[in-house]
Length: 285
Image 1 (cartoon, one colour):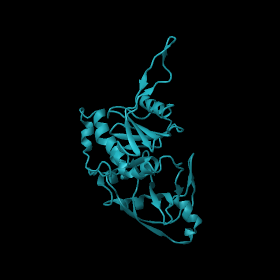
Image 2 (spheres, rainbow, N blue to C red):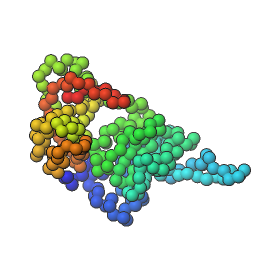
Image 3 (cartoon, helix red, strand yellow):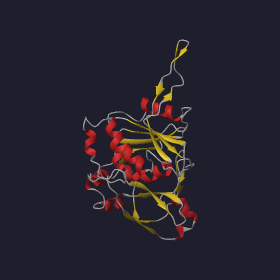
Image 4 (cartoon, one colour):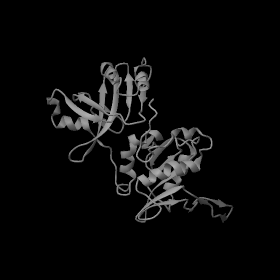
C-alpha cells in the first residue's frame, strides 16, 4: 500500500512511531489528539475551550456509612460558549478502544451530572472512535491514518458550530436522482469521486461509497456497485497492492482503504434494486 499519509490535522505525521514502545498515552495526547482538537477550532482559551483533566466527583462511591470523595478525571472536555460539548479519552497504542472498559469509562464521563454531553470519543493513536451516548455501536471507527476520509463527518458532528445539532443520516443520492427522473438517461458521469473505501462482496460484485454535496448544499451518500470487468479498470488508478487484494479469488468480503486521496471519474446508470439495512434504504448506482 502506498505509504504517503494525508490528513488535514496530521499532515506530515510519521505513523511508524505508533509501533515504538516509547510512544505512549502522553504522546497520543500531544501528537495526535491535540492537533485534531485545534483543527476542529478548539483552543485552551476563548469561547471554544479545551479543558484538560477536570476533576469530577464520582457519584457512586461510599465506604460503609461514610461517603468518600473520589474523583474521576476525563482527559479532555470541550466547551462551547460555556456549555459542555463532548469528551475525548486518550489511550496508549496497545489499549483497546472498542468493547473494552475504556469505552465504559468514557461513557461514564459523558453522562456524568457535571458533564452531560451526547458525544464521547477515544483515541489510542492507531484508531479513533466516536460514540453517541444513545447508541451501543460507534458512529465512527477507523485507523487514524485514514482520518482524511472521515474528516468531514468528524467536523460535521464535533465542530463548535455544529456539535449541538441533530445529525440524521445523509440522504441517498441514488434515490434522489431516481426521483429527479435520471433513469431516463443512458448514463451520467461523476468526475473526481473520492471513495471512502472499495470492497468486494461477491465473486462478481464490488462496491464503494462516497459523499456528494449538490448545488443546494444538500449532502448525500452515493453507493457505486460494479462487476469484475469494471473492477479491472482500477489497475493503475489505485495502489497496486490494493488492486491485487481486490483481484484475489473471492472467499469472504474484502475491503481496502487508502492512505492518500484517490479520485476517480465514474460513469454510472441508476440501479433498479433497492438495498436495505436496519437503519436505511438506498439505491446503488
